[in-house]
Amino acid sequence: MTLDLTPITKPTLESAPAADFADAMSALASGVALVTCWLDGRPWGMTVTAFASVSADPPTILVSLAATSASVRAIGAARMLGVSILGEAQLEAARHSSAPGAPKFLEPFIDLREAVGESPVIAGALAHLDCEVTERVEIADHTVFFARVREARTSLDGAPLVYFRRAYRTLARPTQAHPSIRGRVPCLSS
Ligand SMILES: Cc1cc2nc3c(=O)[nH]c(=O)nc-3n(C[C@H](O)[C@H](O)[C@H](O)COP(=O)(O)O)c2cc1C
Image (cartoon, rainbow, N blue to C red; front, side, top):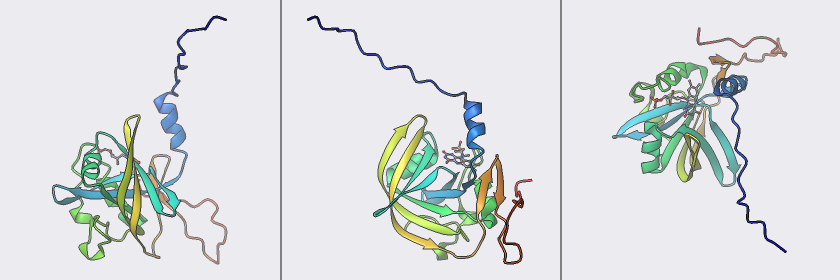
């Protein structure tokens, strides 16, 4: 019997064109969050939609951040991060912390009296999670942080900030008079 020593080559992975991928992802309506940390002793944050609950026990989340961002450097060093889940009232904070190349210090948007654990909290956020990084994974051009939630706080008021088809929106509130919410999704970005 002869052995076949031909090297096994992995099939080349094919990639969809970036624009097609971006168009497809823009069809997914997402809540908007701000990942917060401390940078040079000052509060810093980055607007994200790539945030998910991973596990309830122990409470674990993930965020996926551009590997070259200042946030990744700061969070990687401190192994701490915060996630403020934004409401429609925090639209300006979301815009501020997504401006490419601009400093993303958060002083105008935080309230130290609302502190939850060690991470900066966006004033008026619908919820805030204070987290400790447990693992990081480098994937493509992003760093995915998995983090244990050490403290979670929620406000029961406020409508969510939503991102859909490259625009910020919010949800129409269902009322008893109008139990069906067909058709009304106001856009905040125009
Ligand atoms: C609605 C929205 C969601 C975003 N979500 C993410 C995200 O999940 N991960 C990420 O790395 N960048 C995300 N970004 C981009 C960053 O907020 C930011 O614009 C980008 O990192 C530019 O930062 P830079 O100054 O470091 O270049 C998002 C931007 C917007 C407007």
